[in-house]
Image (cartoon, rainbow, N blue to C red; front, top):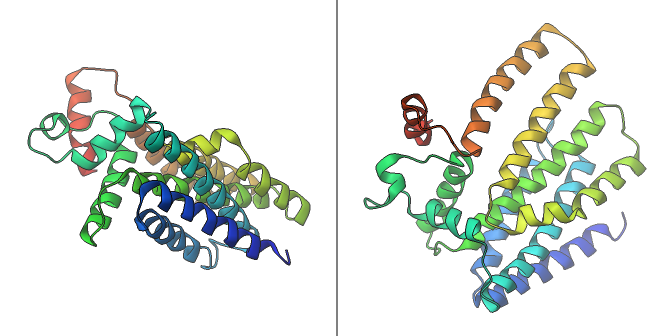
Length: 252
């Protein structure tokens, strides 16, 4: 670990430089730095962070920032944008407009991630930033990074506290190509992955020591997770009950 942090910081700065060059502005570097630093600070809070949680978090952040640069190249230089990413960006930045379909009928798919992105865009707008796609991508990078933190905590819960296993898990998570996609594209997958892994962690936490309190917590988490899962997935039903639910989802 002697040179780990120095190398990690250098690669992170390189990734931020690439993003800034692609967008022709320093704003992407500032936005991603604010989001990741805010997440990194939380890992110094007892019960949340730890040495290997911080290692996993920053390895995942560096990987996400690097591949966000690759995705940005395809988007800006080559003009290759996925339809879903473009859709989620437009909805997250415009769904309060009076003539927008989501303002008229309510958000009916991917409500959770859209609301999260929306508030991120509104926050950065309030401090003078333009609503650009890198803000949503930055949120996804942090979500995936915290998923890696939960993965490390899951390993600890199962009794795998030795250095080789924790290091290997951190590296494998950061080097997973499918996670690069979740981080670098303006898609809902990073939020879905975070929720699923967090839910699995609560199950592991309960199974490691079955107590009444942990059982009650798990039951509550199960209810919340089930409801939030519906806000991530598309609503295929057109019944009046589902329309009632989805129209109220943004206020939940």
